[in-house]
Image (cartoon, rainbow, N blue to C red):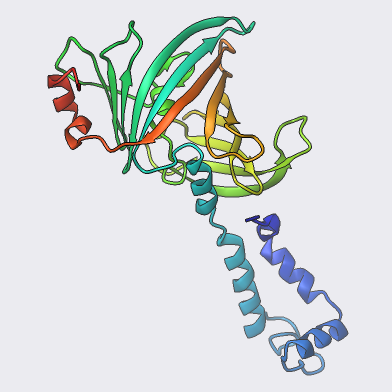
Length: 297
């Protein structure tokens, strides 16, 4: 599905172009669509062209409605399916950090239970973090440590490793978190001949990781290709690149590559090692239960 950007043209300008056509041209158009011809010296409204009249107002309303009716939710839902293929998933994830010169820095493993209704539980699996958990319930995030029974409130921007934040790992829903518009068709990459749809997204709720996202998706399948990620101050925090499992016929995002744009320019790669449908027990999504039960085995 291709969303035309011609609906973004100024409807007043379009109406002006229509009204500047020659009387003969207008007459031919009126006959073609079965409309009565205006009397000599009259405009569309029957008063010498000084008022829009019923037809002009209807045309203006139609143009305005078309310009404002653009809905990108189907595009975002398509893009979301490449990251979250079911409402309730277990995603085994590996996060690797590389220095600006390409040398490896750190690596961690996580098990993410991404559930419906904006609920997620992240279990940290590497020995240095073993037993730590992050719980997301809507706009609320908690960090649970193995040696304390008090959940700690955190933000979705809380760093896990490198430039991978809790929000990057725990949330996978653009359609439910953002609204926006289609900017147009642009190259997928700066040096690419392929064209993508450029979407400009604004946060629709307070608990999202990024206030604004400029997202490029494939024109045909709507798979995510790259994104510019902006924080609350509208500073460009990170640039993301999405690596698909099968470039010629993609089904899932295999890896998300984040490049820091604020300080160290390090590269963080989030690899989705495996996905499978799984609905966790309701008590696993309760911060007090998790605090009292450090082991979920």
